[in-house]
Image (tube, rainbow, N blue to C red; front, side, top):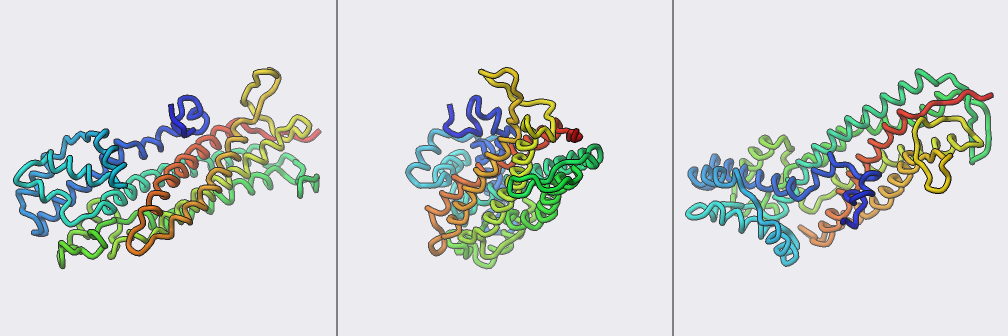
Length: 353
């Protein structure tokens, strides 16, 4: 049983997202970190930083590497990061005489942050596709119901009649803007982290930027010199974007819940949630979920802004806070987009009598 709703045995049915959640599973993280170490050895060998046979041996021996997760857990509790224990296991797998070349010139943050960048880039692409689908569903609703007259409400009071297209535009337009700005947002997270202990290539010297460029090209990431070890604005901008998306979807959910009230009846839900005590009810569960996820991300984004405060070249406290917050925000956004598409597929506007 999990204390988190996203992978909880039954709450995950409402709030979880297996597709996006899998990107934050231990197996995915370890897999990406091992890929980084293999690629690092390969390109260091090409640049003449380590012997060519060491690069080949590391790649070959780590191709089928399986981590001892219990050991990683114990090591993380001790060291605050997983990489020292992981590197120890990798070196044992490679064996002599090449073990010492594993992780050469890198630091824990290089490995962890590059793994995160790769997985977040994949997540962003999936979110963009879902965002596109929600926008398309809203366009279909507008084409079908846009001319139906509804009542505008300002400050929760009836104002003047407006076409449904006015309501729908307030749901769709922010999503269009979020989608348009996503490419720029992703540029801030699709960044290679590689520079050694303090980001200065102290063990690689003039060959450091060469290896960095090769790694960046290999992984499809941008090269940053020095690496953004303590510069977390890109990740925080992404977190803010996530909260904007869920916030906009939360506004849609709030509107739908209000309009679907029996005494209002401006929209009809083809499907909804049941009640254990009142079987006649069709509860707007999807709409309520959008509101909850919006408020959830709005609370966490403040924490991501706290994680900007790194002491000097690296902060264990700020970095750990980031691990606690950002994956939840990504999964919440994925769940919100999935829920929105399903909810909107059941929504139809009702002509006023």
